Image 1 (cartoon, one colour):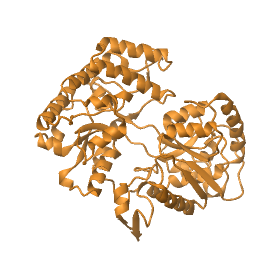
Image 2 (cartoon, rainbow, N blue to C red):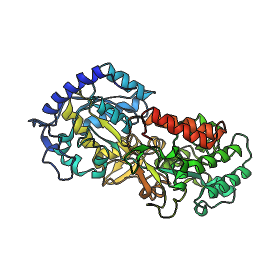
Image 3 (cartoon, helix red, strand yellow):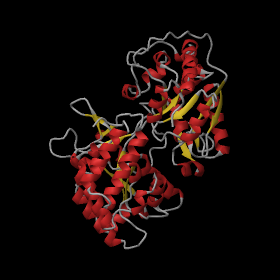
Image 4 (cartoon, rainbow, N blue to C red):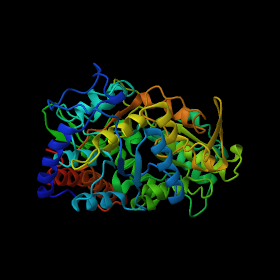
Length: 484
């Protein structure tokens, strides 16, 4: 769902006004850093006073876990920035709520968006060019790795700051289930056949009719990258040597992986609910309270969240532990030993009709500091944790929230986790070196559903692998997602 062109024109005009009057001075504009994004060419007029007033935010994952805690979060952020922070956090269906509010002309100073939404909204003229604001801020220029800015730079300009540092998806395994099947997870052969043997052993050790060794969100072509690494294929859309775009998962080279997934399904090793399950369903089956599956592919931080949730529920560490692996090894001669996906940026963008641009920039700066990172991760002092000198003590509430109030890993490049990371996360982080971000495309959701649809048809056996791949390619081209 995109914003209409009429709205885009109105917002584009507002955007120009905002760029010319926002991005004021104060502590945040003490000079441009050499590693900042390229200058957009706009002229920012310095303000004479510190940012003040109200900052309205529309948020998704960021903030309190309920309405009462959101008030505490707003208060903490207000006190830290000297601004009057108002955060609206829809209970559900965030993406549609966001678009409805923007189409209705509601005014926010910061809106939470993902990478695909970012490209769409930039294309529609709905976001403000804040390149000069970033250049004028020592904090934004120096506290965030340049690669993060490069990942969200479009034609030399940036239109958002960061909510958190995105990590990567890894293979997550229930160590206890593996041990019950006589498997040491560190000895698993990193091939499709090696994992097939693991799934067979897990099934033999747990014949329950509602248990399946592997679960995946196939309906959205999600979480498949570690398996496609076996044939050296990257997720998403890539540019071929002839300059044309294509989807590697739709090529004939992808056939062995789709064939393997069909084999898992035929032998009841793949949860058939994978055809309809969403990420929340997959995670629920991996939790200690359910244990309906033993292997999934998910974001690295969810290793720690599963373990932390179990601990908070009184489950002994020895009775439940999620561990990590990087999946299948790539073919000989590949650029990297494993291929994992690094997440697209998690952003707070400044809408083109924002009223308090300077205040918005100050919030983005705060998120890029040690103190801001602590609020976004371990939460609210006096509620999620207490502090005595340099010693942090987590409360029972904080333990239940598992060090995540929107940014389990903050974007500040030198951030130190005062309570450490949840159990299993440090192991997962060792595989970050194998991860790459997918090419950002405006039709990411359509790409996923199209690949997922034909993937399901092939896995179920409704079409042959050869015909399914041809149909997938043709549909992606007809939808304008790829060129071949």
